[in-house]
Image (cartoon, rainbow, N blue to C red; front, side, top):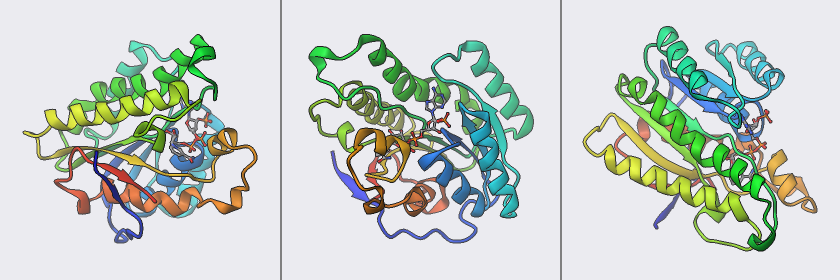
Length: 251
Ligand code: NDP
């Protein structure tokens, strides 16, 4: 697998003007930063995530910056069933009529433990949130992406989604699966030049998940989510038109 770096990309101010972009896990960490940056570059962002208060804080931040008013959709991907996916589709269709981007970003770490002792329930939870949910959302929203002139689907990967390492368990497997989902979809989209599918590994970033994985690390040694957001804007915006089926590093 060839990995390309997006370090140093600077989006034009109007990169996402007029686009409607859905971000999962938008209430915290990287999802929050990508949502705020996307809105600041002209996008109407649909903030999707589990904790309403977090999403409302991001909503306020976007509105007070003078960016386009976002939408909010509260959903717990661990518990969501077919009815909720239908609701998402109907609400987005009625409000926007199309979708120009999805950032599959929500994720959970699960346990850091050997496969031999890995908790089975946690295994199912991690694979469901990190891998099955992007499949379900993409499948549900494909008709709205097909209504866009230039749509982009970003799957969030990880270094351990490309090389297996000890004790990363279900998280690593979910990220390998994510790369595979991205590639399968990208190959199916080869005849649909108005939709692209790519994977992006943010790299070590100062968030709650990173702290959970590396509790002894000094967070100040890591880039902030705001610093890596431009890589997401590259893949969402017109500069990456025609780029499909590729795997990128934000750092
Ligand atoms: P955070 O833990 O900071 O944020 C995760 C987000 O996902 C939160 O907004 C959280 O919602 C949401 N979420 C988690 N579970 C659910 C659920 N069941 N339903 C709906 N939303 C949910 O993580 P990061 O920002 O660090 O990670 C973002 C992505 O980047 C993940 O896919 C992660 O695997 C990946 N990544 C991160 C790296 C890093 O160093 N930080 C490195 C490599 C990859 P809530 O607001 O309720 O907490």
